[in-house]
Image (cartoon, rainbow, N blue to C red):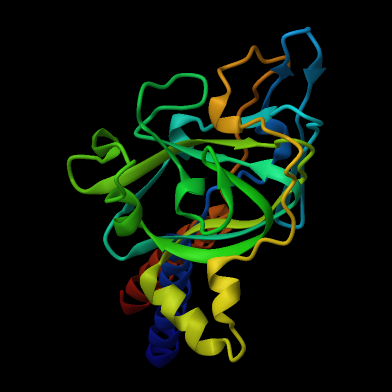
Length: 272
């Protein structure tokens, strides 16, 4: 009986700890619920408008709706959903496709959001290799990994966005559809460098081209840029953000710890 109790305790502990560790290694920056995105309308000089559309399905989020302008979708995370990670040993992994036109992706940090910010934001597009116009990335498929150390030491990164303890807190996103673009974000996650290395070792066919990104089409007829846009009025009500992708792991970890305590209590009663 004692051996069974010990084995059960070890099993429960391993399961709960694996769940907690898994949640810490990979964190998606995209909310599961596409209704939490706030649409920021594009309005031209003649009063013509363009609205952004957002759809999330099977972990993939699409943004579309522009014709010649640059409407965008904004995600302002509730404080409970802010993501704080160490800069050292962590990376930003992305997999993005733009059919035509261009896009621009802004990362807001240290509690600032698309609705309330000063200077604590960074244009990820600056570090994605490909054809660029005023920080916008041209049509193409881009997949790769950027270390947080490289991002935070980039000449355009605001030093004030870093926390005093050397960590980084991500609190918002803004993604543009420019000049007719449908932007498909297959992946935008924070991962540990150890996980990145493991994934690379397990993949037998990874081309250098896929890591740096390739340009398949450039719309040269449009000269508009999301980087030039100002904060336009929103006509979509903001809702509470959805739960993080890793919630299930926290639940598993919590259940595991509770089960372990229950096993220990039973064992102590048996002894009495």
